[in-house]
Image 1 (cartoon, rainbow over the protein chains, first blue to last red):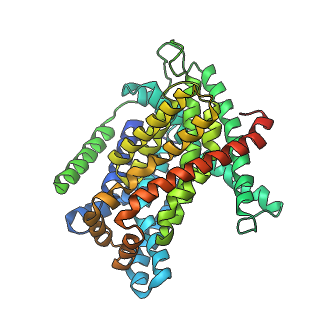
Image 2 (image 1 turned 120 degrees about the horizontal axis):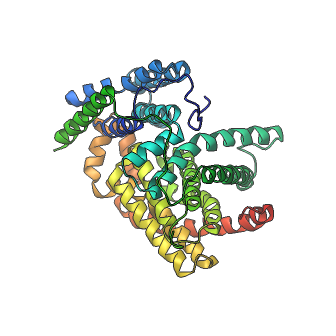
Image 3 (image 1 turned 90 degrees about the vertical axis):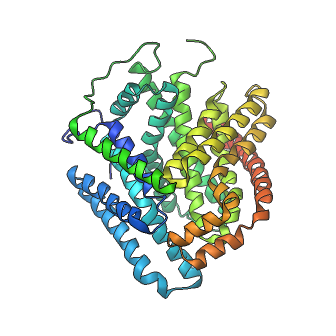
Amino acid sequence: MRSDFFASSKGSAQKIFDPRTKLLMVVTISTVVMADSGGGWMSVLCWILTFVPLALFLIERKWKAALIYFCVYWGATLMQLYLLPLTTGVVNFLLVAMSFFSVRFMPGIAMASYLVNTTTVSEFMGAMERMRVPQSLSIPLSVVFRFFPTVSEEYTAIGDAMRMRGIRFGGRKPAKMIEYRLVPLLVSCVKIGDELSAAALTRGLGAPIRRTNVCEIGIKPQDVFTMAVCAAMILLFIFEKI
Amino acid sequence: MKKSALSAKDLMTVGLFTAIIFVISMAASMLGFIPVLMPFLTVIVPLLTGIPFMLFLTKTKKFGMITLMGTLCGFILGLMGMGVYWVTATGFIAGLCADLISRSGNYASAKKGVLSHAVFCQWAFGSVIPIYFARDAYFAKLINGGYGEEYAAALMRYLPEWSLIPSVILGFAAGIAGALIGKAILKKHFIRAGIA
């Protein structure tokens, strides 16, 4: 899946939500769904929440992401229900780990990937600025989110290159393996990072003035509604904890 | 702008290395799904992060960068569901301590750099706090959450209460070893390639 995070064009993707709303949604889902301790009406609520990323992917016409999310989440849920009671020992551990990782973390990860894939860096920075987040936090954060897809992309590319040369995991020298993977990864990431900061400096990042932003961000009725729902979820969650 | 303040370029360097260190740590932590390997995570992860960290140190000349990196690592791990407060707090503390150590060596001392990495490696400590300090609650949560009695019991068996201090010490030692590996790799590759 190509990342649109750094795309500067407004393109075909309509902006439904403000970046601030998306951020709040990520926080809500990752706290409420992941902390779900099972049982009670809170679980039902969590279960409903897991459909939110799916709905958003469909609205944004990210068919592939929606399909992956749907299959992984429901596959893991079904596995948990029907396959786990049948296994014991090491197999059980592996299946438990895999399925629970998927069920617990997938909604949050899907939500975060929705945020990253539908928000440009400029919009993100604009939203951060409106929230009065200091630049010392907003710049590294946006770089981190920009770099997650890049690191994994570079890692796959390096893996391909190494396989072509017959260097693969499970070989005789694990220490060498790590060197052959990590060093190229670091070199290419640092190079990309240098280019990125050169580009950002050209756009006036770090200049001692307030930057203007061409992105159209703003709180719309749907944002107010979603934020209210998120706030209610978090309040309910805290309430139930106490 | 004051000279001591972090420039935009410094902040982007922080972001870049946070992403790299975080991704590497996460990839290695996947091993933790096998309960037997869980206690060894504190050893495996520092061995790997030593390389990027030492490279990061060569680009760090101002106070605050390592602190920021620790805090961000903790915050993002927290967002991924490890309890935001604990991990962010330990990330901040570990980052700050590592930063102070590096600063005492003027960000140039190799020995202080190695020590700094060993301290920095404790940033993820917050994620195991519930295992040690709220043991019963954590156990109940695993079972209620559906991990199953067997898995939860195994995890508890491999992470007994007394293992807290050895795991911190081992993590520290692995941090030093990782940093030494990192320094060797730095000399072998990055300085030659001109990016350190």
